[in-house]
Image 1 (cartoon, rainbow, N blue to C red):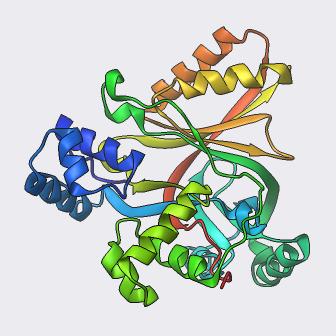
Image 2: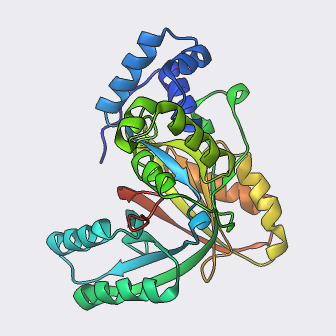
Image 3: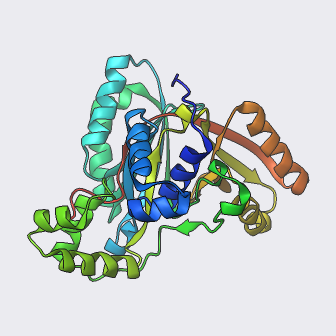
Length: 325
């Protein structure tokens, strides 16, 4: 269990601004938080050292490159810590796996796999099963249709919040150049890398890099620059909530409801799974139950059943397959 680290309102405001745009300059962060630039830089380093800020990541619309996501939940059996570590290692090293989570609930491991066609997906999955099938009691595979990011509005007072979620998957192809892919591979796991550093790595001028970045942003290939945050160190648990509905017509109203909830951070739209699912960071399980009761009261008789998973650890998080060159 992570040690809870106390932070003040200024740290929370800084985290909120970085979660909205982790690439913005120290100057802009200082202006928005009303702090001195040296103080902003010091606080960021302190939050990084404490492990609250894990990474500065770039959210990329992988569908621009004709990729899709399939999520896999695994219920494990007859494993040991060593076997589970081998499973995680194989998944993390696979270039087309973009995220791997350890979870608590009906399943123990979750991952997202980026693929262009089902044969590619099946090829890797069969390799994985050849090694680990004896340790898998149940598997749940769900293709994704869309994936929404919400800002961590719970970090700040209401007056500062930006409620609009970001849709990641447009399913509109992008005519890219090799330099675009190299740039994305560099920036995907360090959104704060400077133009000068990018220029050196790409053997381009800073002005040329700036032009390419702006073009990728304009065409929504780069959707956002965000934080990979260890919310457990702030005293929050990460829950994934799945709802089975009696009436699918309430989905737009449910989306509107979660969009106004400051603790909601993601919404997934997947096939062959639950009717409505979203991710939320809450202080405790009592808050989770209170949220579900609120949903039941707003939509009486419309929620058939609900269940949740608790995220325990993130092993990998990357929005661009390593195989794209």
